[in-house]
Length: 143
Image (cartoon, rainbow, N blue to C red; front, side):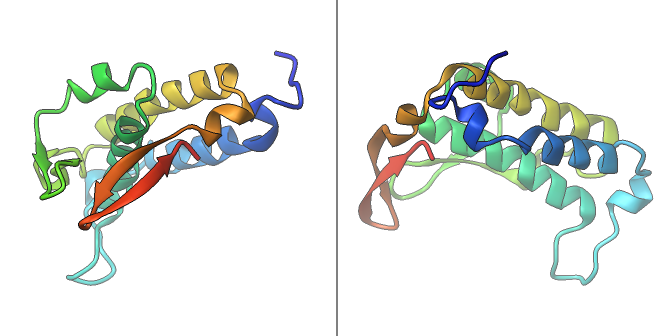
């Protein structure tokens, strides 16, 4: 694909390498490595990866990214906060000690990211919508 100056590829060049580094780090891990946590009050390795995965999906839902609603429909553990924003209940998504599932949930949202990088223009990042959060109204942009 030819990169033009108004392509998001120009801004986000290198994201695929970052993404692939996470996949390559997670794929060979055994369940006992994924459940390791540096302290009782901190996420385990697998919980951190799950949080990255599900955080991407939650953010994409708020940005109304094409294809995200279909992906989100595969998740049945959602809750709404007092401002009516949807959040995934991460603890109910039991993938934190399953490397194959973690990689799957890394790859699926990444396909949406690649689609965005290939189709959206820089000006598309400026689009925003009003979003209530913590009792205040914010402009939620795609950036």
